[in-house]
Image (cartoon, rainbow over all chains, first blue to last red):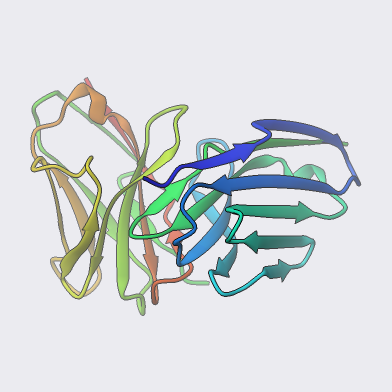
Length: 109
Length: 112
């Protein structure tokens, strides 16, 4: 059974810092991995999707990498801003979609 | 920009009652999904739907749950006899292919 773990559970950084969020999964037989952000009481906003054959994807200040063989993905956020404050979720697509518990990010002005 | 919509935003019901949660996926999408998130817990997959039938379902999606695409735009989740533990946020999602999933804002279900 696929297990998805995200470290750290919470992170607080000053504005402008670059940061890395980590996601690990136990079963490497995946189709893709997707990163989302979730604001309190709201739905999920898709940030990046990496297919199993890809190594990384970039969108603006975000860069996600995937190492399928070691069961790891990272989300790199450059030059963080207070508006980046949210919970970041990774989700792994196999036969179903398995989510991590998320990293709660706070970016202080 | 097209988006997934869900109604109602909040549903309160008595234990044992039937509820229907409604979703309008993005119009050219072919795959539809339901997820739930119990307060403070992970998002959990319930079911995926493609070509008018269930393609995958989780162990949570038992006989009390059903899904339907009654017309060309709506996608519904029915819970036949609600329990207290069904209280959660329910999210609908859709994707064009088996790729990026776009989520709706959710329906908060409260079972009393």
